Image (cartoon, rainbow, N blue to C red):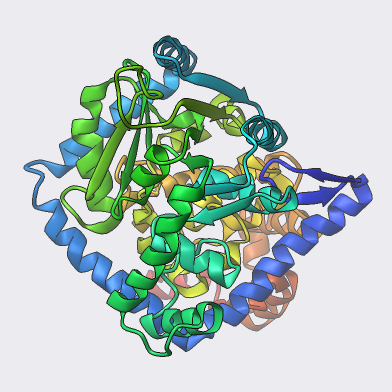
Length: 480
Ligand code: SF4
């Protein structure tokens, strides 16, 4: 029987033995994809062009902060407070939001969230949905699910629209089509929409706009994510550059918001800090073009807005992270994408190689907790631990330390392979014994160690021991 796992992927009910095979498949697929992508020079060129533009914009954006370090520290403290009191914050939100006529739905996992959305669609006799960019809807694979139920779901963010046309998931949490050049997009529109070949970016945007405008008017339901859930006033805040989220909220008669429970900030005034931080670290802007606060459905004296508004608060493994004192910090993430842009591994292997909704350093940290540690632990090993991600994080999450923490948890939970465990045991025993370290010459050590750590040496240069032991070298330097 088919069922949905924690991240919305359809999987079969599997036995323990089969699970081991999938475990191997996940990591070997990752290695196979990484190997191909890392050698793809054209991919690297496109990414470097786009990340290069981002890097120069961010320098400019940061000039708006008189004390950037303090701003990031403050943001981290606010998120710390929000996450430490998450239950109260969410209840405060629910109370205030429902008082104004909105409906809050608590979804423990993907299956529940999808079921609730389908129930609303059926109740509203919905055949068509406009959707603004939301990583949570990617997480629960909402578009595939709606398609199975013959409901059209159209992505309205330009990058997401491009990805949907191409049948690909987003490549990056902020810029979904970052890996495509303008020529790639022109070719895609030509193939899928019968436009003239070689349209300019402006012309391509106009084509998308024309197609999408009709969809807003036709759709019975609009679905958006939320960049922030504002507990105090019971509202959600959406940040975007194209106005498509606003249209998705306002045109259809029903608005569904789906957001991870960690998106909470305690008060409205917190946005004074988070909006510029998100804009600068996300795209290098001082402020994103459209920042909308939605407080509920249309009131009787109002002209515009939906008749009904629902907010689905999704757990889907987030309470696993909350319960884990060390990993909890990763819930402070505001999904600015800065750590992806800074990561040398991401820049070489690209977003799709991770095969997870959230890629890059933050994805490598949270995916093993949102899903299964044994299936996804390999992502935490895909890091040079250079610390660049921690350096650039808008809310100062210690990402590289959390990657190490995941590796530690994986080993402590017994998920390290048999050969790896034996190899490290021998390594530890030997390196703690001067007598053993002095045995044999460098040549012999090279032969033994490079055979023992084949997982390392298959992808790196061989380890090369000194021909003389430490004691011999010391003796030579200090003969007396
Ligand atoms: S971990 Fe930090 S840098 Fe990475 S997306 Fe989240 S907030 Fe941005």
